[in-house]
Image (cartoon, rainbow, N blue to C red; front, side, top):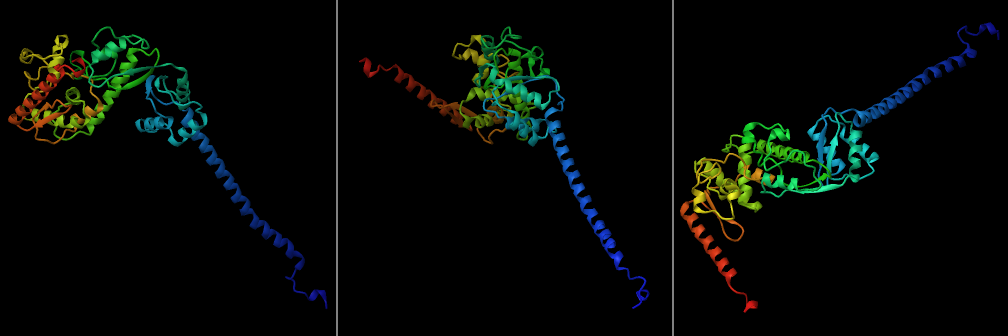
Length: 380
């Protein structure tokens, strides 16, 4: 057969290069996809380390301050609290991861000073030094007065005296921002949260008192925001005054809201509170353990038998429980209460029943006194 008879377009020798070109064209997208995956991974890794850097080393905008770490607090709990208070302070999961990697010592209770604009890494480093600091215990019992607190701090060997010189302290001396109407005549009674605290040895009385004030103020405002409606208090300070009276009237948690309900009812009906603890506070050093009839008749700013409404300031340091009771009183018809003689109180809706309860109380007390005066069998 003549070779020239083959069709001109039939060229088998050129088919193989054409197939190779096709395979090359198919392989290129695979290489391109792999490159995009590598780039994406690099971006994710870069973002992760950037987020770590921002969390751990970016300065946080805040002024130099003292912070208190409570007994039993953990790093994770502290991170949650900080983040709730300062949204966007850092990325919480990454902060916890950073702590897990870098925190070699447990969190110790105490008072720590943070510098201006610290990074999270700096704060963690400062908290890690807690185990080196000696701690002193400060215990403030509910119902004690500000004067009791001042006396205790002045006599505490582990606390440095900086501002306390007597039984009085003003917001200006403590350098806290408190309106004058919330501290009449500079009286800061009621403004320090009673509890048990641990401070670094050598902390100043100013540092301790500022910490206690900030805690009480924060608790009061939070409770005020969740209060019942239509309460007879014009300001949170009036609620603090009521809380201090409740604190002095009962040591039973179950009675706080009941007593608050009685006092709220009396305020609404324009009845005088007629509560002995306010009289005692107004007597000051004259109080010798007994209230006489003449004491009830003497008009002082704190004698609620003689004045209308609330006294001008709190009469003690109230607990959070008493603050919450003052702002969430029981809905009750009771207008009176008196001690039973057995640790609780009898509540009454009218004066006749109240007078009976008073007589029952006096009978119990006379019985206890007679029993106490009886000679024991061993002495016979």
